[in-house]
Length: 328
Image (cartoon, rainbow, N blue to C red):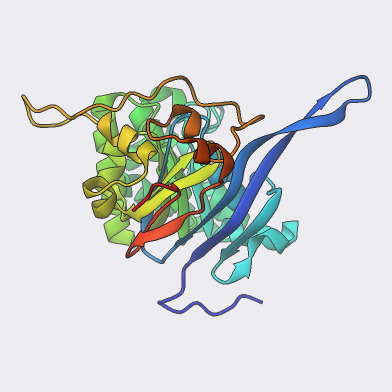
């Protein structure tokens, strides 16, 4: 039974989420270790809010999004959507929730079936979930294309006839087809040319305002996230380093990792330069993460205590949390 959702309650609650991928070896292929892709992640998203999830490649961002939607099954923790424990739903119960929770995939080339026309791509979700009448499908598909800035004349074309930016618009239209309450946008512009990225970002921003979308926007580019997100979550090696409103995070970053990421964002003003923080080394393996703070091996502020203590995400200001023992 779905619990009633009030305006003050979050639409999505993620509590202590874990996703470990087993590693098997030996003659009997027993589990010998695991990849700790997501390790104790918690956050909430309120209706109409766009939350950015950022970090380097390998930080676990995409796995968080896929686990929330149960495209990957969680190892531990809980995900509540509209007050309902998604992890406890059966396959048949989860199917109805697919209508409410959708995803925009990262790769616009791999996410579309090359043998299907755009008409089929957009009408299959309608047929699957029994939305509208069959006689209305073409009109609905044409309206979706117009909503994402494409022409209804494109319905009879195949994916290979479109550019990368156009394909991503089709992917966005497919996600919107079932009128979802929540969308995971998994690095929707990372595979596109810089000139096309701005167009897709502007499209998502317009859709956010027009449709009051609730979205988890996954990205590794903090410059992109700043323009569309209300709050930002910074991840590193499967853990949350910092959570704050977008305005607060960009004006007053607290965690050393957040400061390093922001220092790499280009300054739009000619002649101005930002002081760079260069992180040494590469992100450690999630198979054998460092003890204590997982960021300590690359942190310019690391002390001996950082190797012993696992820092908890603690509030350092209204709505601003940081997982660093040196946070003030």
